[in-house]
Length: 89
Image (cartoon, rainbow, N blue to C red):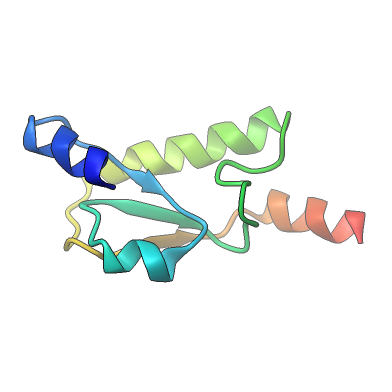
């Protein structure tokens, strides 16, 4: 997140995508998205799941236009991820 802060100070807005909202909130990122229920290493979803990864990226990019308090993390459900995880069990 130090890199994110430096990029922001240069005037370029950023969005953190995190699967660990508690630790990320402590660092107070300017904007952050937590895909609900995603496992560590699956920040954008499962490998090769292009539709889900695209949906996560679009949702993250939409955060650029929203006002947030530093450290506030937007949590978003992506039912396709939950459905795929349930099918594997």
